[in-house]
Image 1 (tube, rainbow, N blue to C red):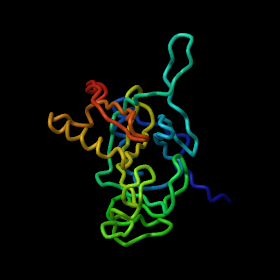
Image 2: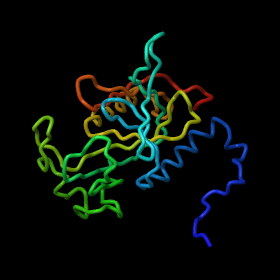
Image 3: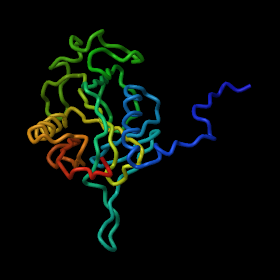
Image 4: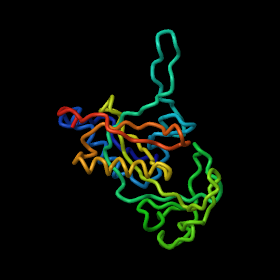
Length: 228
């Protein structure tokens, strides 16, 4: 006797109402929200390892490339055009006791999906409440890049996105790290000043040429009626 659970029977098909392009984005957003904070090891995401965009799933990195000029090789994608499906309303937090290695699959020692309390399954909870955690105060760590005092526990913004070129593609996670949070905040502020809803546009995501691993964000276009 097997104890394997059949999660989705193989002989069922999606209802017709869920097979349209219009249904893909809201379905992906709902699933992303349902999976928020849960580590299953297979949720696909965007990695910015080595200053390039990659798709990461199951520990495997697939670089995003763009065609080169005639007779020239393909080049790493410089601008990721994305639709923002959903965002964690809170800043999530992660703590590594040592130096984090970019692209590592190592789980953080402590993390918080809601930015208030540690997740229940963390390996080593650092404090009961994030606000008063000693790892969450300025000066608890010295930046290896700038030599300035920073927080040992990193703030992050978690997004669920779709590539604008294929709105039927699977939902992807995107982490906006501490170095990019200021740029993200300014972008959202600019949208607010013009009354532009983030869910109705395509966003250009690029790398800051003057800072390693820092992302920039800009308006690309509005979604069409068919895409919205």
